[in-house]
Length: 180
Length: 273
Image (cartoon, rainbow over all chains, first blue to last red; front, side, top):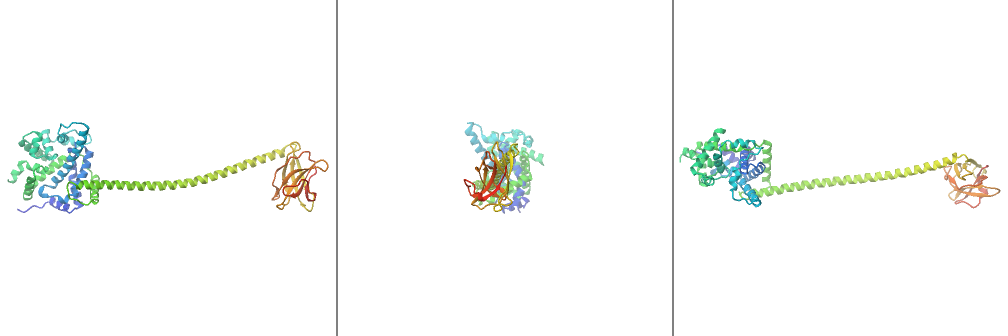
């Protein structure tokens, strides 16, 4: 079967040629979403999130030629870079905090992204959090913010694998209805 | 596995998150390239998730994004591209930080140097100004002192002249030889004994000569009242030595420094009391 050439493919081609205009176009399109992901990983620390986004974008631009579309979409690739960068930040921050207070019992990763305390400056956050009920949200966050596979999410959240799959799919279907 | 099965399996949602193992990621990517409806489904999931996470943060404005882009491209220009996911960003980060630090240091240095030069220039200008002002002040003070002295001298002379007992004495030419039109106007106060030269019309003398004023006393007695020069037709001295019991006054030309007794041949002007 013949492969479909999409606008996305063309953008990727230009990006692979280190076309700054193409990168800018991509940046306009994706940066706010990626900032949203980073911010959620960092427990809604917007200031740090902006720095991490910038660091991630530098990394993305520097490594754009290594993007391999056979391993996932451009968004997925960028999401992975941003997420890993943000998680690294929470680890180093956790490490610092850990040295101060000795609280090491809780899982820092989960605690961070499940922390749903909206700050007054992020008005959209409260609205966003209300889009999904907490049980759906924890599955979506585990997969998107932590990059957990279905199996890992099931383990971390102590819920059956089938439930993870269903909840994830239903949650995203709900979001699609909401946005489309 | 057909397209519908993949769609309903819930794997696409994990695929967009990048949360499948490598083999599964490849499998779905390949399938999406072959099946547009699969690609469309992935696109819809992606769009929803992008909007979902974007909703949680304030949207970045164009200016902010352009600024970030400039910095991204700038950061890259300053690094040799190293296509290693683990080290690349760290390298560029360090480079960009040191570059910023260097830029800050250089601009700091430039500003400080410019400021120092400016200050130095200002300082030397001010120093010159201060020197000029000090000079002017010294001149003014000197002038002021002189004015005060002159004023005091005039005051003293005036007091002497207007004193009721002061006598105005005119000395007139006695010799055709020395100064035919010569005269001297002076004041003498017999009580205070002060003698003041007020005016004179006498020729200037050679440098080795001076005029000498004498008080004529009883008989042939004379008293030395001091020597004086004439400059531009006027006596250079004002008050002479005090004179007591003078019957008259006379001026002779004497060697510079004066003589003990008048050289009568050189008698120039003389008064009658």
